[in-house]
Amino acid sequence: MEIVQLSALKDNYIYMLICEETGMTGVVDPTSAEPVLKWLKDNNKKLDCIFNTHHHWDHIGGNKKLQKKFPNCEIVAPASEMERIPDIDLPVFDGYGVRLGQCRAVVIEVPGHTTGHVAYWFEKDNALFCGDALFSLGCGRMFEGTPTQMWNSLKKIRNLPEETQIYCAHEYTEDNAKFAETIETTNPLLKKYHQRITKMQSENISTIPSVLAIEKAINPFLRCDHPSLKQAIGMPDSTAEEVFAEIRARKDNF
Ligand code: ZN
Ligand code: FE
Image (cartoon, rainbow, N blue to C red; front, side):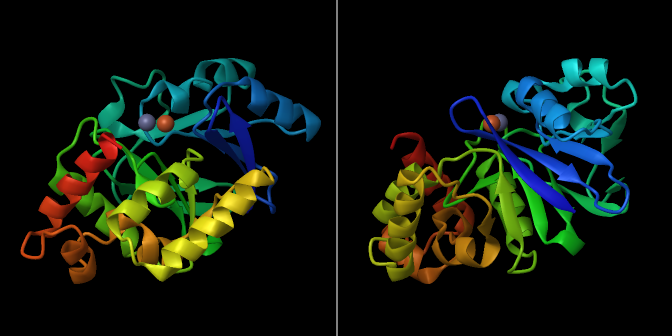
């Protein structure tokens, strides 16, 4: 599967997916239709499928216009957000298999940012499209879920293979790195990675995708059960859920 990253608004990423065997083309979280239509035109492709991770407007904003232009294009989106995402063709839930031509993905429910948030895991392609559930060095704001729910969602992602590429929906890495350094002040890998992404950003290079192995080592939201992190924030005897709630709250006010 070929994956192409398009930018939208200030910091959104839209992903074009192309099955190399069949030429079938999909898009993950079209913020708006325009960048997608431009790419399709430039590359002489039509759109077969839209994958939505959750109902927020910056992830479904392009659905309507794209489906109007390509009436056979199917909208795949979380079943539990059907009332909030118009015109879903294929409502999906945890464990459901979806395909784009020969490329297959498993749906993983990752509630917390919204109650029905899903991620699409293309195992053979080592790619996870996780919307606003997990960001590089951060995670989504907990708009609709509880800390326990969101922590469990992040643990599901953490259990995927280490080499999984994390295709999240926003370029928030630099700000996230600054926050992460206030939590684990002495994580040497975090410091190095921060320097690396600062350089990338100064050259206008995307920091996404990230790799799960790196996220596990330096993303504080994936490390809430690590004794060293608990110690670092003065909560050595707290549960992972409590630690998650605390650092999520700190990030909200950062
Ligand atoms: Zn969102
Ligand atoms: Fe978003």
